Image (tube, rainbow, N blue to C red; front, side, top):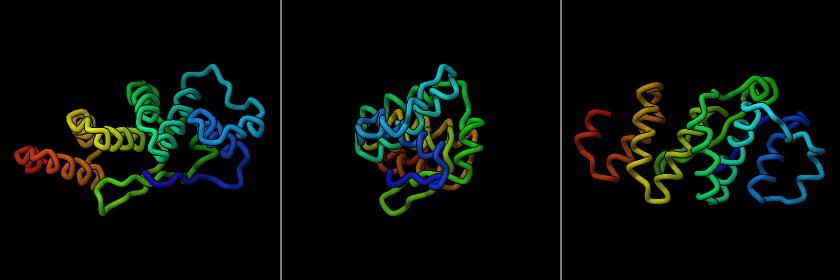
Length: 166
């Protein structure tokens, strides 16, 4: 995981990213800037918070925290980007290393969360789980970066028959 970018001039976007940073413990002072705007009762808003917390935790190499947030998001029936993310973070994305030589920028949303989770699983030695969720994701969205990530992971695990099918 490398970087996240969104709308830099929008205070609500900054607050959403600030909430995620606060939840990961990266910058304790962010609470004062938020003014309580991260409190919400809707499931969608909580999932969006989990998205940013998980992405930032992964970027900070806090794998256990990243997995906690991203697993909850990937298991949720709520699709991202939600309405607020689409409105205030349109065009935003996160850069994810899918192989040692290739990093891709993926728009903020469920696909980015699933790919980030697979990469964190891979980094923590949970290759079988990474392969499983990437196979499901590639079936739904056969995009080149996802196929490349899956093929690299299968090759790393010497699953040559599966590599040929990817």
